Image (cartoon, rainbow, N blue to C red; front, side, top):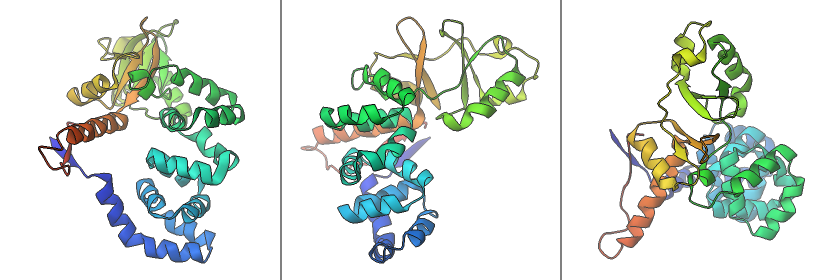
Length: 289
């Protein structure tokens, strides 16, 4: 079906009206423990709305007071200008753990909006594995599938058993952005198949993945436009779409939430273009997502 996406401005106004007085009081009292307890009852998106509503110094104080797991998720929900505001208020040392722990695609999106000199000063402080990942994703041109993708996915070989694959998922799930699909690759990391988590858990544990995987894989090349990726996810009702290089090697995935962001962004641009004909307050839609 078709679902209306509530513009963030409306959601933020509602959250700020309801919660801002309480949190302003806690912040003025500098009661970090009470702030953390109150924030723990909120969704990360609502925490992000509060950060956007607070003045600069209180936003930084609030961000430092909330638990790490909420801090990272809330930061990923923030618009780029609010992310940059926090970064410049708190500095690279205090923000380092958050940046290192962000999902790879959100981290690169954030860094792309910082001045090049700021990024150059920050990169040497980031752990080697994350730094290598950043450089890889930075190599793709903006607005391409490669620039939008995440490298946090589960890839397995086709000759392992279902039982072995389930154990792999169990061990690696916490570090992956999504585990709804397993991507099957050969020795050269070329994408040769895919299977859903559902098909995995209902299969015989002794079966090989090559026996049950789907070989007709819907995929997109890293150099294709991100709008094409978003349109494919919407059209085929996918939770994620794999991204390959020109040689067929699996290099990442684009998830449904990132596709929604692209669709909303494009809808906003279209609304701007039609501003002389239609009011800007157009509803945003996402179809089949």
